[in-house]
Image (cartoon, rainbow, N blue to C red; front, top):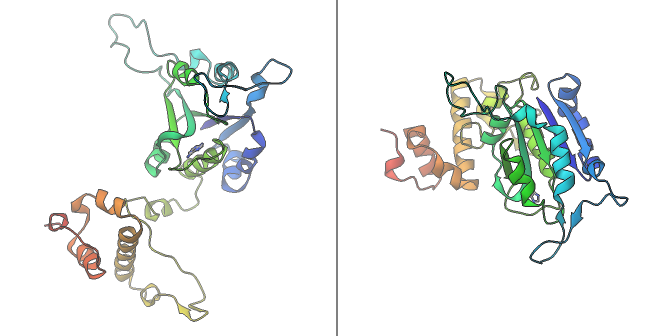
Length: 277
Ligand code: ADE
């Protein structure tokens, strides 16, 4: 996968050289470049912002450097929607043969970033991240880009950061670990939190007793069925306590009678219609 990140603080993205992302880059799984937006300015002050039309606090990022950056990183020819097909071909309904470049713009007004979106992004050929600062990027940059490529404004959550750089670190970490060959044990993707709409059970390692706290006996029993059941119930109880929204979103057929019994025993209300037949 190719990834381009554009920012006025490229140094903020330095951690992308470390750890498993760094290894993925070294292994050629991830071809990542970070660009300084000011490289696409032409005035002596390398200006990237100006006051907002309509008034209000703060500054807005000017469209010109962003336009040039996107022209350079996603040339129009790369992403041209298929047009002018001969009459015997199906009508133009999609982008050109290769998956198009996709533009992601982190910001608090975006759609919520989720594990499902991470999986979706992990299948893309080329992502560009446009890191806004100040009050954001002139909306026309996004409008114009959308004539050439899919554009998604994406938010990490219901809070406001100084800019998109930290969001890019988060999103790229979530996406990179899903790329084939990056995780040594791909099985762990199956069991982790959010993989099946539930939070993961707690985990333990040696020693068996530490400062008077024991590892749950079942995990040391060798009873694989019992361990799987215990993990399932712990995941359910955690989800009910911490993320009732996730539990409510679970299709009723995903809960069997033992799940419901465990939830009820722990004091969580499970409506009768949520009990699998
Ligand atoms: N930039 C500023 N706030 C943000 C948020 N909540 N998510 C992603 N990018 C942001």
